[in-house]
Amino acid sequence: MSAVTAQTVINKAKSFVGVKESPANSNNVIFNTHYYGKAVSGSAYPWCAVFLWDVFRLCNASDLFCGGAKCAYTPTIANYYKQIGRWHTGTGKPGDLVLYQFAGSNRINHIGILVKDNGTTITTIEGNTSSSNDANGGAVEIRTRPKTYVKGFARPAYKAATSSSTVSSKSSDSSAYTKAKFIKEVQKALGLPVTGKTTGLLNKTITVSEKKNSKHAVVKPIQKRLNALGYKVGNADGEAGPKFTAGLKKYQAKFLKKPDGVITAKSTTWKKLLGIS
Image (cartoon, rainbow, N blue to C red; front, side, top):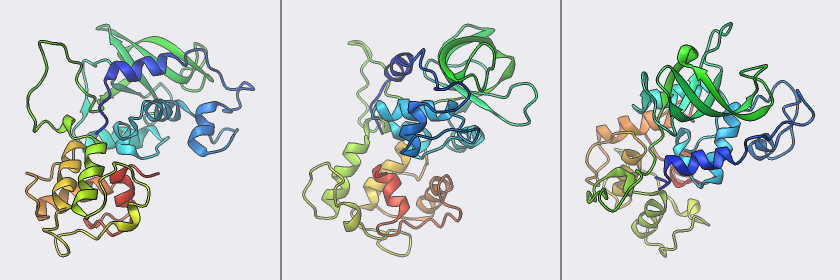
């Protein structure tokens, strides 16, 4: 998991305050260009979620936003964090993703990143907003709003901010198991040069499931990776059993129509685990 603090992501989001789509009401904005790989415009491209996707990407922390998946639909984002047990109501923490349902909408329809929970109000940084249109205003702004329309707070698994007196010594802490460590351990398990780079790695991957390669050396780093992402598969004992399959299916549910609990060689599941776009 990316070792990035909430404040790092907040600062990156804040650096874009004042950016606007051009021309107005076009949804033509740099964040959409990054997300779609080309300039786009029109009503089909709202970008409040895309803005945050891009912010996490620019912080090298894509895996903290929906597990690394591309997602521009706010209900899907909310459901993802609910599924992995990182959905909260009540009081938010800086760095939380704030999911709103504004009056007149029948679903969650906007998102921002929390700067501060003030008690009865919250201060956020949001994309595609303005004082004239909360959920489609065309600019990145700092907003302070009442909590009336907040449906919940999604909490990415940030690296904890530490000081000289509060450094954790727990080597088993999932936050310490980064994507970079996972890649290296996969390379070692597959008998490959340990470079930490994913170039060519996908082609060397193998199928892993309860029925195939269930005790291969690569199972343990996969277990550690899934646990770090919030999908509890039990102790990283190096054996793919029922808990492994159940946790893997929950993970696959966010990007596969039919999760099967199998990590097929060279598959989308391997791509997601390794952070290969």
